[in-house]
Length: 473
Image (cartoon, rainbow, N blue to C red; front, side, top):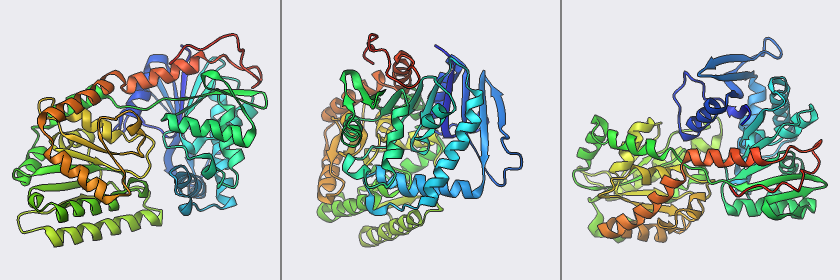
């Protein structure tokens, strides 16, 4: 396969802690094929030298990053990406804030990406662009004469067409996906939404094999459910089980069952409502009082956005109310931790938990659900409670699926999970584990790259030759 160029908002540099399976998957792909990882440096300030890039070489990979000014970052990232696109894609049109100046800033930064990236591209390179921050990038590269195969993967959900059209420039933003050769989404539901959007808004022709023809410009859209480094999580959880922090947590529980939630602090995760459901459990099941604790790990993110500061205050208030009503000097019902826990330690906490409570209102996939399953002790696994609106629910049907908008439904699932017999727990876990062992992050990466490589290079962004069918991926 030809050289690979990965493009993302942030770059996982070799001297940084790799925060997840995606970074590891991209490093593995780049090591296998050779290539470049391009994105923002994480630095803000005046751009002293126009066009200046930072270059780092390690393990056969070139890391190339660019700086942004504060005003560029605010318009592109804080405002349009995270206060316009993020709520739109997560079915929260009531939270959308749209200003033309922010949209123009979003386009300016994507233009900078295209200007800096285009000279680095060789004729046979394949390009893999990640996430909603960079949707217009392929169109801008095409304008600069780039005819390489370009793939895009959306890590978030994709809203229904009736919601996408709420965005004033939706035809320019969502329509720009047609300039990619391959567009990957998380689930079949997302894929259906994408195909329906192009059919309704552009009168596109929907063809077999995932092809979409928009005014003679053809691209392919497929679902690629992202996964985890299954073997890595298994090993990490097993090793962490005996570490001092995990041992201390186990002792502090004093024989009580642990329910765990792990979410970035975000309104899409449904954490306040999760607290309410846990309170409902304690109110309705007297026998569980002083016998179960909820540990909610919620690292703070996007602190510049007021809504996120408000969520933290709300969580602290709700946790305090439930702890004050049901707790006693020897038992705290809810433990709230608003900081990042290193992955190896987190895997140890997941292994210790009897139940994982993963109840987002909307999520592209939710890898915590998969990490929890992989972290379990095969002889005594816990139970996964999963929102029907997480992308993972399409694959993980053996979890206890719940409606996160219904606190009684979640409370009843908690009670069922805490009383579930070992035989049923093992049966459910085994089915979920079979999925994760077969469909890990490496399989996801390879499926996408095979599909991208298989797409015939278009002729001046016209139709791809129809005589070459692509093998199923």
